[in-house]
Image: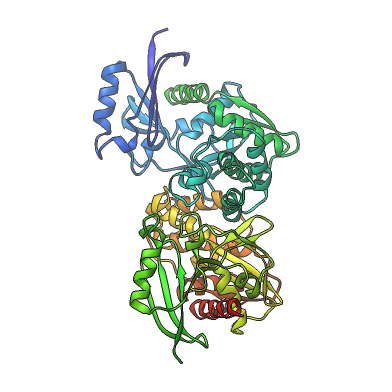
Length: 289
Length: 289
């Protein structure tokens, strides 16, 4: 098949572009660091023209922070529940028929996402997860979404990854968090303690345990990561034996899988890039009919 | 009375020195920014000599991070329960009879403090708080201590103030936390939500609420501070109508007082400098007998 669409996952730090054919198959993909932070105000049209010059003069559908106040256009949030048809009907057209941005979603309980909605809906559309299921997208801001009938019924966010990065880079704990993070006894101890515990005290005691010689400094990063991920997973209201579909790279995916299992759920890792491509191709198709 | 002792509260950032007479009365006090961060390794004896040259050639008793691995001497922690006589018997003498450091305390549950123990014991010794009571020292690392029979029975720490500073300076929330923090409806809403809630999600929704126009950006800092302080107070197991003695400056003292009242306790603010002076004078006296 021939190329038909350029799909762009345009985030704060990175940008990923896929050239898709009419069946949503990836013909080519590119990743660069031209996230929002690397684009001057007003510079988005020129950046996209450069991308088209490289990948071909096809229609472009974008998702992610490119639709935020610091992106190309501040696209209003669509309210949950929302599915592929809802997003397709609410695209923000930068150039009519040729260049559009997928709106982000708002949860009525007071939460927001931009970009993750495409992955979530794509995962179900590609049958990587069932139409009624619990999905998790670990990362800087970890998203938990309840899918119902293939649509996003509601979601919540925890700044788990960002808190870990802040602690590792800027906090008094930084000296104690230099070791690697891996799934092992220290990580799992952290998960169990963090699941129903209060983080500001538990994090301080991570340092105290190293000072008192109760846990090696080498294990402290795994333990602290366990505290944060355990607290995140503990807040997700996972039912006993409930399947949880995790969209993450293998490292973070393994950590969340271990924590979900400790919480009593059944984790399954799914491919977040395949989910994104599946979602954006279907949103584009729905917008054309 | 004539001067008899120089008492030094020597912390990471600041140093405070008091010249005391034989009754523990303050004849003179000085505050400077010669905390640990401003003293080169091995530079402590010279810094103290300069202080004596200024304040007089008296015995010196120090407390705080000066007794840590990054201070003058890494003084071993004393284990709780501990009182004035225990600390006096475990002073680390840098110069016999003339210059000493008060040891920090460890709680067997895995927590540590350096410097706060002097304030806590001094507060009770000066009758600012009863011998059996709950004390709170808000700050970068907020300490909660249970006193029993005038001794420190046990304590725990929450990195409440440090987390707020990290969020304000380095996080994605930073843009939303530029307003003043004050005790008002937004702060109190935060306290109630944070008391039994999970911070990583609640903090993200602070940003979402501003993006969705549900709370003014101006109120976000008060709300986020409320979340953190509420979570801290909620973990302190305050009994209904229990008195809580708070050692803090007026601003932080007011915020913690409001949160303690919401948690059902009865807050009383006490003077942390008077408590320190009372404690260190008594520790010195006990070490001389």
